[in-house]
Length: 119
Image (tube, rainbow, N blue to C red; front, side, top):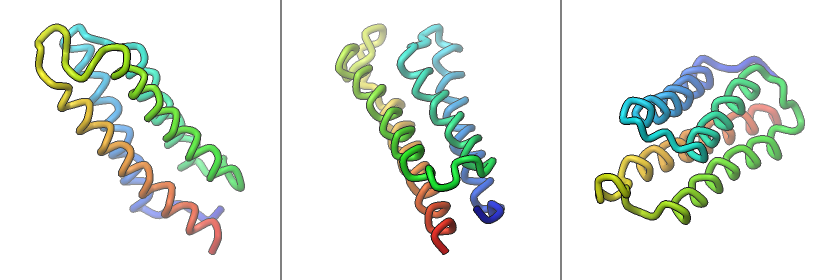
């Protein structure tokens, strides 16, 4: 795999920061949710391994598996806990925002790196 571009690295860092922010806001409000934290850590690990260039030909399966697992764990969380926060009664707007942002950014990063691998 060719060297990662500065754009790839910045995108990866942004994805990691979104995950850390997600964990931090839940820790700060004493509402750590194991399924959500695990999903965040899966994305962080995937980005680190991806940007380290360790996936090679397995980039597609590892990326789709990581992003899919992230989405799956968040869907399981919603199925178990509901669309509103039990403590506040408010909709889980931040969850939807962060999941959509993470999925979109992760998909862009994967697509760019896969394209670079095949050129």
